[in-house]
Length: 421
Ligand code: UD1
Image (tube, rainbow, N blue to C red):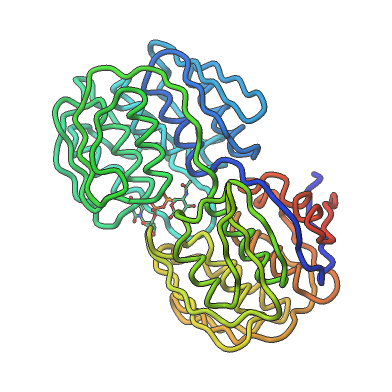
């Protein structure tokens, strides 16, 4: 079967303008949450990535009519959606698990295959299941599926999460909006994607307090209505462009990028030597010369996002000085470090710490993307490597970055797609 890879000739300084589209991790959840109301919901600013097509397929199998035009997705939800999400789709994309909460809340029953998704750690789902049980559902695993039922509806309750899991907060929020009575979710995730989902639900008629804080209070309603909502811009794609500018000594204006969603990463880039300024509709990131190394520890929002960790390691590989990067969210997320080492990076991993000694230039080689963000991190490394870097399995990158190779080329990089038999 034909696969694609990116071919990168390193050395270019990125220069110019890009526009950031809607956030993948928001748009996919909004699509799943559309199941909560019968009728036609419209979601705008949806990115043109493979995962959106997978979510559209999943919703279609659940009985919805999904129409995609440009960056707009309309989802017509039937009176009673089907309740089974099959493994062949769920395994391609972890965000499929987000149909669980809406289906239990609306249909009283869900059978959702346990997801695969990115190879970045064990990624448990126990908080999702425990939370639903606290809301009165039953949940058990059978033949690779989680089967959750609540034939008489969910009942509001107080939930405390052991960790501010993004996915669990979203699933429980989208379940609680139709529960009888009031639900609280303590130690809730505060990511901008969760806030966007909350605003979408409020647009449907949900009653939610505390969005963006660690405690959500949800007063259940009996029925929600379809809505029309615009997805927030992708902060991880924005951050990736910012790192690309700094690593290549470039100058990129990122239209649509929201600095307020990226406070810590932009502060870190400033300490690496970048000049970050606001523009009327986004941010501009400039860099002269070689960046200084930066120590980073990933944490739930507003901490440093784990999804930008590969970019930090790539930057530190060519920075002046030594750095420690600590991964606190996903234990498997250093797997791609072995690929960076193939480019000559000097990195030692010890548990969830990576120690990096910056060198002036990496040296191009074939490497493989293991997940979306690792793939993007390797592409950035390829941009600052001498000679040719081939990033194999680039379909991972296409799952999160619309037209990444083409956008890089427009900024002056020598990047092309190649088909590999
Ligand atoms: C989402 C994002 C992902 C991002 C992550 C953290 C999507 C599709 N993916 O993933 O890009 O890196 O947030 O910002 O939106 N955990 C448990 N039990 C649970 C749930 C989570 O142990 O029931 C653990 C996970 O294994 C992980 C940590 O909690 O170690 C954080 O996971 P979580 O915040 O849930 O990430 P996702 O929602 O999967």
